[in-house]
Structure formats: C-alpha cells, structure tokens
Image (cartoon, rainbow, N blue to C red):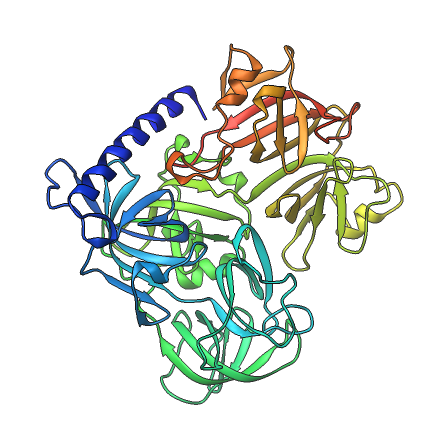
Length: 506
C-alpha cells in the first residue's frame, strides 16, 4: 500500500477503535447501536458479497453493525447474527457511512447456491465445486465425499462451476436438492439454470430472467447434458429492484461473453451502455474515471470472462449500474513465464520451477496465439515456451487459467502478479503464490506507480500481507523475476528486478 494509504488506514484504525468503544458503552454492536448519530452521515446501500469477518458483519471491506429490529434471514429462516458464517455470500440492505468502512445492516439475507449429494467426482449434480483460497470448510474433504449431502455458498464462475467460499454438510434434514439462479431457455415443459435442464410443467410459470430457487430430483446424464426433474419452483426476491440513484456494491464474476447475454438481459443491451454483467446486474463502465480501476485492474483490457471483481456505483433510471469503481478481488492472477520442462499432464502444467500449477477447463479457458489450444503447449518445443496466463487463484499455489496467450519470455523477464503471501521485510524478500524473490539495491521499487526512494526493508514493510479486514485486504504486487539463479524457494530465492504494489481494496 502507499505511504498515504498506510497513514489513512492507521487513522481509520484509531477512529474505528474509538467508535467501537463508544458503541459498546452505549450498548451497540449486534445488540442495538448508539442513539447518537449526529456526527455520522450515511447513504442507502445495497451490497452483495462474501462475509469476511463476524462480530458485526464484514462484507466488501465494510463493517456493518446489526442492530436489534433488523431483518436477518438464513436459508429463509428468521435468524440472528450468530447464524451467519464467514464465507457465506449474502445480500445486505442498509446504510453505509461516508467513511466507506462502516455502516448499519437493516437486512441481511443468505441462501446457499446449491444443496445436494456429491457424486464420484466430488461434483453436485454435475456442478464442479472449486475451492476459493480463503474457503471456510472445516473438516470438509477435497474432493467431496460421494453420497454425502452438502450445502455450498460462493460465486458462479460459469455454467456447472462454482467457486466455493463456504461448504458444510447439509444438516437441515429435508433431504431436498436445491439450486438458486436465473432462468434461461424456458420452454413449454423445461428451463435451464446454470446449464442444468429442469423438466417442469407445474406452476408458477417461469420465463427467461426470473431469479428462482428450484427443488429437484431424478437427475440423469453428465455435464453438459444434465437433466433433472423440478419438484418445486419458488420466485426469489427481486434481484434488481433498486431505484434510480441507489448506491450499490456487488461482488461476483464477470460475464461479457457472449454479447447475446448482455443484449438479451440488459436494457438497450450493449448499445444502451451495458459493458458486462455480474449475475443479472448490468454494469456500465463508460463514464468511470481512469483511476476507478483498482486492485490490479488498469482498464477494460484486464477484464476476463469468469474473473471475480467488485463493482461500486449507482443505478440509473433503467436499472443499469453506473460504475464508479471496479476492483479486482484477491483471487485474480497474471503470470508471464515459461512452461517447466516435462510438467505437462493432461490439462495442467507448472511454472516457476514446479511451484505454481496452472489448470485449464474446457469451455472456460481461452487460448490466444496457440492455434490448437492446449495442445499447442504440448506440441514439440511447447515445453519451455513462453506464455502469459490470466486466471483465478484457486489454492495458494495454483491458478485456474481463464486466458493463455503464447508469447516470447526471456529467463530474466518472468512476471507474477497476485496477492502477496509474505512481505519478508527482514530478509529483503517477497513471496507471491509460494514463489520467493529477493530484492537488492538494484531492484526497482514502486508504490502505486510512484517510485520509492527508501530502503528495500522499509518498502516491503509497507506491504500488507495479512487478512485482517480492518486494514484492507492483502496487497496485490507484481514482481519481475530473474529465474536464471535460484529456484524460488525461501532458501534459494530468485532475484527480483522490479516490485510494484497495486492500490489495495478498502
């Protein structure tokens, strides 16, 4: 983070401590909040994102108090703050204070994305469950145990694929398979939700774009041809019932391909200003200032299908979210490297001396300058060839590739951009995705595009490498690495030619 950001976060920490003390003294927190709000200004907000901390409830870097009298629901049941779990994807309606790090939650709603039995592949009715790096799934095996029922919360990456942020064994006792999502391809006797076809002839009638919860059984086939029988369909609360001017923060995955989805579901389609979608929320970045791209994003070219982002802005008169900021979430990765010799195995390969694993997925991974797709990497001469890889960090040392582009890469021009693991200030090292690089007096250092003139240790010490939400998420750094010496381990680190930080999320 920048020096200015460090100072600001320090001040915020003191202010937050003072506010918490005042709230406790006045009976605040989830028990009911202070009556003296004369010094605080706030605005109405709707937020959708993953819970990162509880006590109050933290979503998208904002700590929301949960006063008595609020509306709190967990899987359609009236609940309290004690019923929520870190990792659950929730919707919050309330007010956000003008500091953008605190607020009041008037409504909190959680529902799982899918519930059902795991099959022999660890999938649930054909839906692949890939785990986020910060997943909350204590005691849950990977892959999931065949024949055991699970409840999964997270973010859909694509049809048949969920990035799970929370998993538990399904213990509600009803034994009902459920999925929540948007209707597509509705017909006289069937409709689709996230690629699964549901045979259905009951009521209510559904049409494309409806947000529904489906209860189902009797599934047959394997993806992409899974068919189930819907036993019950319920309309969910309106996904977008926001009024003009309503402020919003949404976390989810980018959908901008095919354009047909945007034209079919957004008012006026692409011509009307919609550039991409998060779920069924249409988002326009056209009027966003250049400094609105944050946390590893520099502009539209960085946006990838399936990439996890946060969009903040306000709704216009026709229901399009006019973005004021778009932030890359902590799971995005960009790698420029050569393929490690003899590491190609099926749809995976390794880079940085077999430290970072790159996996691909049919239908999700896009290939550029590689005429035969993945096979181009595996062709004669492919091992050791240069690639630019953009994707999603799935474990501390693995990435699911959304795009792989063939390009020339010299041994001293490898690059790795991701959330930092360890700033290693005392040893003048930085570790990203398990790859350790050592800086020296010749390493170029930049804080948020500003050259840094101090020591390596002081520079690295400013990099936030913890998951404490009170000072923001971990910093994103890009390291230009010379791989001609060392092997990327802490004991034999590479040399860092450049280290740059990206502005972190508040």
